[in-house]
Length: 223
Image (cartoon, rainbow, N blue to C red; front, side, top):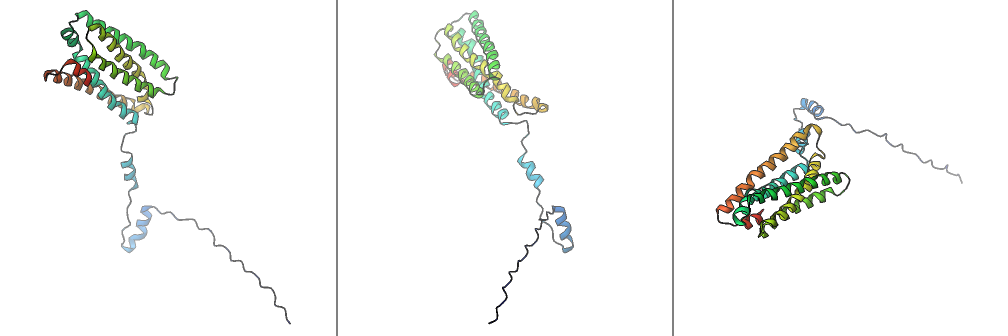
């Protein structure tokens, strides 16, 4: 009986790797031109421009702080516009009392501006500290609605301006964060514009409330 030779296993070589060919839109258009077929045009550049239409300097901090300070400035400007009338007409305070209230408030704000600026560069929770400053300012303005004697206004006003002094250095630092140096003027300009607009709107609202028969206490609560 004859022995059959062993079968040899044939190894099928793997096809060589073919690198994908990437054609640009212009190359595809030139290839299809003899056939009279128009190449589909995908304008990726325009899509990219649409996605990045917001200016680089308009960061979240700039937008959020501009909007926040529009309302914050309108609130305390409401109070500042009617506070002298409240002290002299409603509480019968002398003119000296107005200067005393303002002096204590501004002095408190100056001290806490320095302290806040010093510590904000050394802590990791400065956003929370800044938010606390906004909340303290609003609380101090609301306390004016409970004032029945003019010396009490000194404390309420000081509380509000301690909060204002605490938040200001932190706010400036957050505004500058992430903004290119060449665009600093635009970022701070937008913020100041919002702040100034709030300073115009606040007194207008305050006097509109008084002229429609509302009390000083109601104005302070609205603020």
